[in-house]
Amino acid sequence: MSDLQIGLIALGVLLILLVLGFNWWQDRRVRRKMQTHFPASEQDPLLGAGAVSGAANAGGGPASRREPGMGGESLRAQSGQPAPVDPGTDADDAEEPDPACEVVIEINFAEPVRGADLLPYMQSLRHVGRKPMRVFAETDQRRHRARVHAGESYASMQLAVLLANRSGPLTAIEWSQAWARAQDMAERFDATIEGPDQQAVLEQGARLDDTCAALDTQVGLTLLLGTAQPAAEVLAVARDTGFVPDGNRLAWPAENGVARFTLARADGAAFDAGMGGIERLYLLLDVPCSPADSRAFGRMVDVGRDLAARLRAELVDDQGKPLADGSETVIDERLQVLFGQLEQAGLPAGSERAQRVFA
Image (cartoon, rainbow, N blue to C red; front, side, top):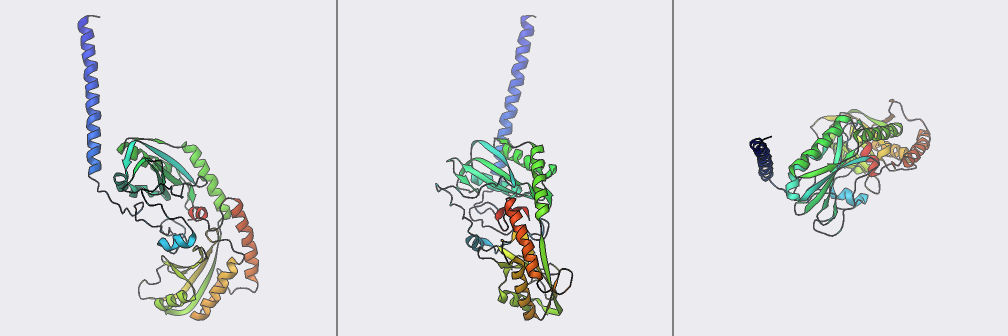
């Protein structure tokens, strides 16, 4: 090979390296410009510094189901949940991913990233398909956070994806969506991602779903009001009886603020929606989401009878028949067995984990 050929080859290699370097530099410049176009906000509705804990969904699917809760900071105080740590403190947040029902994708940043730059992307990390995601982070000072704060910088983030809920186990499509969003974050902020194998994740989700399906039980009663009664009057009576607002429903709270059972209109509307009257109400004991109680059903029957007397209504079972004498005792004995099975399965009735997977 002549010196001319060697020189041409070397020149060609040099040109290729120059083109690759130019493309890399241009890509980095475009990314920085894109990030500057998103406004930073310290009040992100999901993970910002001022966010509070809200109630999740009620009724079987993500769009309708709500976890028992009375809303906002009052629920946090009643249920004993730890409040999020103020940004800048040396304490770690207590809330962490739950390996029993969540799978985690780790995002490690090459350089610390400001929370203000991360917050605009948090909205896209709320759900994948019908499974909720939670975001955790570690500051550049190695402090664990359950929320991203604008005033801190972060060395890593963790995306905790729910493995199963009442919509079924985590699917391959949902897992792929979660992974794609983690990759998008990694590309935007120069990070690497780590996570478990997809097949292992899907098998874990299927096992959890099988366990939950075998323990999922709800017990209902119906109040027949006869003639339609004004919604405002029904609401006033229910609240005077002891119910508190919980989204479109009303809830009968336990001592820790978690709902023992709920009261809902038959049409699913909010009690203060429209001017129409109410002819039928539903009482529902969502067993896995309600705190274990030796009189779980009997307590709901007592409240139902009191409410029926105040509303001049008839209390019937889910078959439309009057309650048989002693039925409360029989059902409560069966529920005690179920409460024990939930505890044994690592899903204590009324716990945060149980409310998460039975949502």
